[in-house]
Amino acid sequence: MNELVIVNNLTKVYEKKKLALDHMNLAIPRGKIIGLLGPNGSGKTTLIKLINGLLTATEGEVFINGKKPGPDTKAWVSYLPERTYFQGNMQVKELIAYFSDFYSDFRPERARQMLANLGIDENARLKTLSKGTKEKVQLIMVMSREAQLYILDEPIAGVDPAARDYILKTIISNYNENATVLISTHLISDIEKILDEVVFIRNGRVILQDTVENIRERKGKSVDSYFREVFAC
Amino acid sequence: MAWNLNSDRPIYAQILEEMQLRIVTGLYKPGAKIPSVRDLATEAGVNPNTMQKALAELERSGLVMAQRTSGRIVTEDMEMIRETRNKIAQEQIKDFVDKMQKLGFQKEEIIKLLEQAEGGTV
Figure 1 (spheres, rainbow over the protein chains, first blue to last red):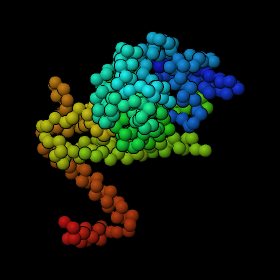
Figure 2 (tube, rainbow over the protein chains, first blue to last red):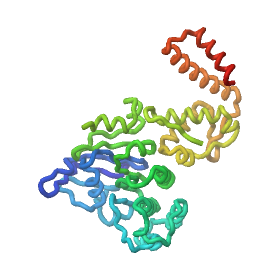
Figure 3 (cartoon, helix red, strand yellow):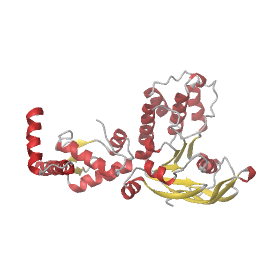
Figure 4 (cartoon, one colour):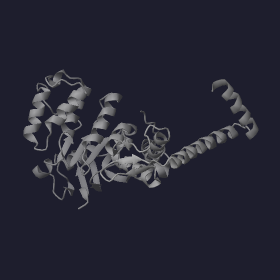
């Protein structure tokens, strides 16, 4: 089977009848870095939460490697939520121990190497770190797993441009060739050079799925410019 | 080494041009091994599949060759390197002349201006 994730007719209606995903269909291949792009409120995070089994669908289904989200899929999916869920009192090294216990595919030596590269002290407590540094720590943890699917929800929103470059390089050099990285963001210009494909979503539906190179070639403009055109207010 | 990638053209074509430039300017010497796809992708901050595609095209053109073990080496065919260098020069000249003609200069005037500029700066 070539597709890693299959989204079938997926619909999510929140309370008060807000339709977040509207009969969405999407196939995500293996071995690609994919950008999930859409304006605020378009359904990006809802889709990600459904793939991670954190929400239940109103209608339709999601398959990862042919399985519905659950304990099995969590063993191969490495997820970076948009908000941090770590306890402030924890030290960075405790977090490494915690991930080692939780995930058999976690590689602590890889995490330590990246922390050292960014000059982050393993003895520091999370609450003493700046917002950007906390985000870096969290991304390092997530990328230090040997997962089949990495799902990164807004991974670079809070960090400075130099650290953004480092993070993007971390993504390029750490994912293995059979794994897929799904990145949700609206900071497109920073990220488009590392993407194979982009998925544009609007009002809970996929309106375009294409490669970055195709878009640049056919439209003669960057994905960022094209996005601004498609989603012009 | 900085990679100046434009936002409005396919990345793959720009990588190809940069690699050609690195070979004709001798940054990657004839017969020498070039860095791996992963290393070059990380250095340029681009998708490894895109880098792979550009290197495969570079290989088709003959400027680099795949090695039996792994990796790629720069061709030792100096004639081919010279030709590539000339081709790049021709493209630069064409761009330059196009711009000058848009500014309203004729060929003779362009040559005269070039000579004057040369006297001043070279």
